[in-house]
Length: 524
Image (cartoon, rainbow, N blue to C red):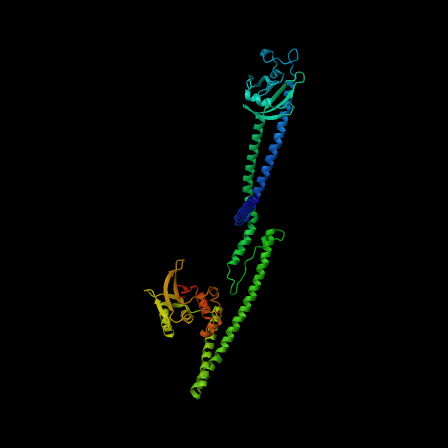
């Protein structure tokens, strides 16, 4: 017995837990669906829901109050009819006739004054016998009750309390009371058809008025809510326009503001607009400070790089002169070689910094027609000589591919990408350089350059910042290869200056840099 009870309790707990999970899941789905709705839809739905609840409450209360009122009126009529039937005079002798007596001698309650209305019924019971029963029809004739109806009426207690019964010919309100002189029970009844019809039409009327009210509320509420939320939509439009501005770099003019007509501290939307304008003012000031700081840094880098070119050139010149004029020991020659190598490395870094500074300043570039096919062939040929331990492939279309831009800068893009491919991959890696033409989706065409390799790939966490300046995956590799972390940053800056795009896709065994440059006629 105890094990059965324990199993029953366990099953009850499991059922309760399952019901709780189902309810929680349903609530979560409802919240999830409502969470994605627009504010105007939520407000309109809430308004219609409250109005529907109000209409239902009014309808139920009105129906209940009207039902009580009509039944009370009917009960008054019924009790009056019952009194007339009870007080209807009996034959001489004061006792009801027996069942064997002549029917004409029996007193009929329906013959009492005021008892001839359509639908009224009366039945007189003496003991278990019923006599003088019937209901008045619309044409004034009298119809006897069926045995089933008489049986239903015989069960009514003679307490003078009206009750509702369902008879074969309709719903009735009946009351039973005893005639003191004879001890007979007189049951009187009036039909509920008129009351039911009145309640039915009341319900139909309330429903029709409620539906009409809901429809009008839906239309007018939508218009009112939409008009009320229009200022909020304008604030959202300003925020959307600001989100599309290129704020990451350059001198940004943040002129977007919420119109003054919508900025009122006394309204909710006005408060949002006012706060949003203050936020934009703060962001604009921060962007101005950032721009000044970037300008100062760029100017410093440009000035420092320019000033460093002269001493670096002098160092290289003096080291070359020392090599030619002085007799050095093997250790001295090795040290002098290190000085030359580092001076060349420093010179390359300075040149890269100067190039980035010029690109940042937006100096006027040389726009001529460039044979990209020739640039690819020359760059790959040079790379084959510099990196013999790599396998090189080249894919070119049958027709030459041209572009518009600065030839020197576009050559720098190719050199940096190809150099990056063989410097940062292991010997034996295959590097493939391809060139083609593709539609730009705007009725024009783009020159598409791809540099791919089957090396180890680039880690996903480094791909997002690979085009940043001084970006290095690890210090040890950078020291080994002599990388400054500026090569891909220069590529990105040059491509952007030529209104092109560069993208990276990398997984182990397949790394692809894709450059798209717009094609067109050279300026001037």
